[in-house]
Length: 169
Ligand SMILES: [Zn+2]
Image (cartoon, rainbow, N blue to C red; front, side, top):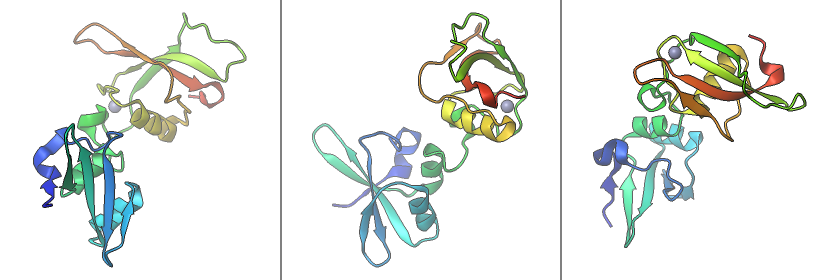
């Protein structure tokens, strides 16, 4: 079976779909599974080749991962402004505790309303949480509910949950 090109599929390629399964073929012919950072680094170094099986409704297709940059962005190994809505800079953040939240005082998390005055938008909460951890030391919840509000064209307000003890700035 001749593999198809993932690069040709472009951004629609389901890099992070749960059903996409990755195969790594090493220099010595060994075949392993997985899509971790180490696999990416080996592929970039030319020490292995990455393939993906994209299961279709009737048959599965084998793809060669020939756009490693796109692969890395999809997996969060490389930052992607387009996917995440977030620039790689120190965000201009305005936040306050959500006055309507019903957080128990014993809850380790507190709800905050947050606006990004730098113009970034949060399309990917996990990526934003990683940036806020780095920039302000926040431990932001990346599971459970969050919400986005705001008029079209206006700055959006994000309702997010942050570990109380980490909210120092
Ligand atoms: Zn920003």
